[in-house]
Length: 292
Length: 222
Image (cartoon, rainbow over all chains, first blue to last red; front, side):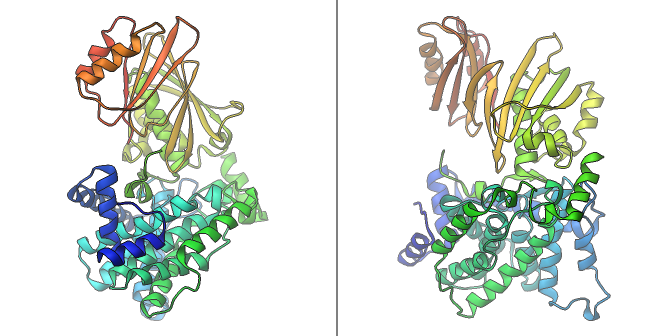
């Protein structure tokens, strides 16, 4: 059992009557020699790390190594200045806070799961844990969703890239949002086709997004782009679950993302030489941080 | 390259903030730990390119020292690794240096052991926490630590490879990849053996006892 494209996953899912996570487990068992129990145990460990990061971000005082970010997740989670505590709704509020929180934990040298990268590590835990709490979903359901998300990330890794240095931020937070969106759709009862419509929509929504980290650090604008990634995943999942389709299939969106990534100038691919990193404020912050 | 696992996509589990600047750096450091068998009194890190530019902001310094102490990339002690090294009396130094035509995230580690012997390990962090070791003790070579890796310095002479692989065969260790590197004919050489299973201490000792084998190092990276 192996697959290289969304098309292959969709065909296999339909011919074998299996969910994406079931296909991914079969693949892992065959190629890596792991049992399903081992896989689930390891994924439960990953989920535990994700939950600990979320928990720490809203209960502890977090400061990044450079001091540039920290404490934002808590501000959003505990906000009472807006009437009712939110304008986006309770679930979206949590997803935003949690996804930013994981990034803060990452930037403060806390433990995270790269999903698929450290710079985009907030999107998958942020959305899945918020949904788990709001819909009272079991651990097993979330673990299945994580496995589904990995299948979508695998397709991007095989056919394009998930590295900001190669493809810009679209490759990192775009892929993370696609992984989350597809997993959410399957978890909430959507079809395999709908999962990939959601994944395609997420990636399409931020095509061209550059990687321009201030002072070269995985802090800003990464943290807020994780919040955007989380909302992107939820919006795309909602569309797909309601029957809205992506006109361009996922595999072609991945190709487009890769082509765009390759045509981006190197200044906009993690080198911190362009974009926000090369603004007056960005340059000043860089100077302050690296002179310390 | 083997087929990606779901835990390569959703992973690694790691101490932040950067898979290449933190997790990868830690793994290169850990190779230094293994090649010196944990006996370290002084270590110099020569940091090239992006490693040299941003090593403090990315915690690359703490990750490298954590690796030297034998920690894995998800070990929370990495955050305190500089203090831990201080308490153990291990001295360390970070030096920005142009190492030539190498990957942007490259470090050369020079380790001084308690008996004064030095060990040199050079490696690059190539993304996602993945690494390539490119030099050991002045000899250019290549391995990734993706498999259980056995490094066997030996004297370059006929039959030595057969002897080593026979021991592995006797212990039912399957070799996935194997390469042999040497300085000059008849002098010190290295076997890099990548296997599917862990090579246990007994097997290592048997290999080390072979005539012409100088030492054995087992490198098992997470």
